[in-house]
Length: 55
Image: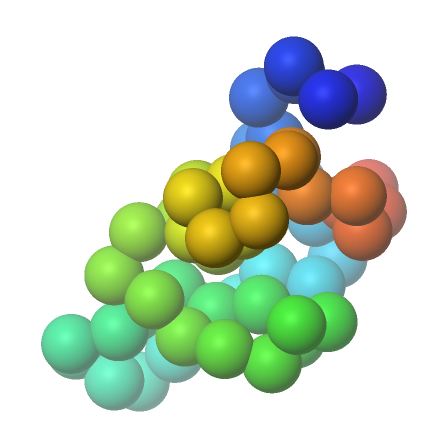
């Protein structure tokens, strides 16, 4: 799963926030972001999100 693109929209931890500056969030990692959480995880750690769980 290292090279696969993660679709956060299909993950049970993904949510839409009320914050217009940071509209996308991840309940598992506990952050909000302008981009999809999987992109931020990849940029920060260098590996794809390993906590993806289908809804």
